Length: 197
Image (cartoon, rainbow, N blue to C red):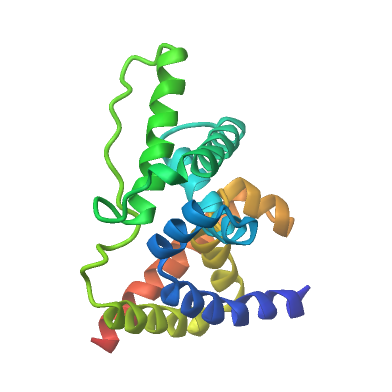
């Protein structure tokens, strides 16, 4: 099992660097024109866990978040032709679909307050992508400096979009251990980040 933990951490650097190079807006535009399943799979694999984590942060239970994530990604498939890259980056458009699905669900459930904040998961495409690459590379290096178990839960939580309960179940550890590892890792990341400035 320790070998698996190390392998996951080593993959983190590669994943971060690859994601930083992908222009999701261009990819979504290409998908809307070609309806290529391979492009859709890339979009799905990147956004589905993030959408689910976002919906959970809105206060939904895991099963509801999973259902709303699936509905959102189905809307991406069906409505990609409506996407306009001049108005929003891909992540903003996709997260807006998720937000609207969540609001609709809350209305049906008669939630008292269904006003949710907008989300902009990715920085504006006007920003320098070189800066994004440097930041992603720096964060990947910092995470590799963490103890293996802390690095693993950070990867699973923030990059795979898994809930704390899912991580605990997958690793076979108590939920409290997962929360503790994430808290400790976050503190260490902040300290390392400040020291390197």
